[in-house]
Amino acid sequence: MISIVLVEPENQGNIGAIARLIANFEFEKLILINPKCKIEEEAYNRAKHAQKILKKAKISDFSKLKKFDYLIGTTAKLGSDYNIPRCPVTPEQLAEKISKLEKKTKIAILFGREGTGLTNEELKMCDFTVTIPGSENYPTLNLSHAVGIILYELFKKLSGDKRTVHIKSVSKREKDQIEKMFIEVLDKMTFSTPEKKETQKIVWKKIFGKSFLTKREAFAVMGFLKKLVKK
Image 1: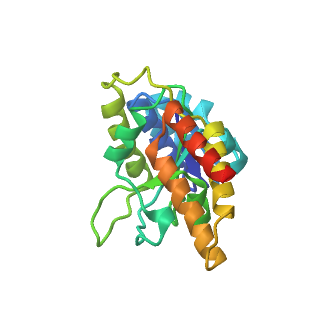
Image 2: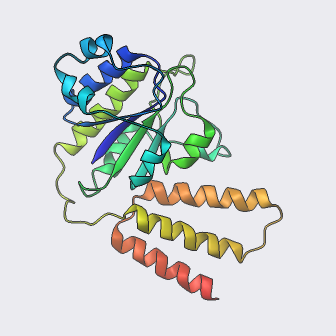
């Protein structure tokens, strides 16, 4: 169950175009986080025959995101290996990973502001990030174009691959438990600086997020971490 989340969108034309794209690729859910504009005539005109997506769109703040099993951020600004929140996968890789999850897994794909995108703090909230490869001279796409490319890749993959529907996916509760147990393990270790310990937390959160663990794998990881905590 995939929701498209727009963080503080400023242009109702973009919102309408994105609603149309959501319908084009057979998705349904649109969430607006603290929008800076109203959904009015321009948005409905751009949505064309997808106006029902706009009518059902949820307007909320960041607390809405707590219900999701996975938060996936988007960014056009890439960092080095040291900028962990901005080390992304491609849309094609994202679609491949999501295709292996249960349909009921709650996934939110976050798109940032038209001018500045998502902040580093917002990307840190996410399990991992995705980026659309583009020109080094001008990598930033229009918001609706970026949504369209990612939804296309998801639709292309999800509409045909049904081989792993029997495999149970890890839930947010289980992911949170793994993170909690991993922090307990780190707390038993010595680091030269608090910053290095914090880096380890961020790195492993992203690793577990990108791996899309199954329930069986998650329980195996928790069992392993439990043994480490007891040492």
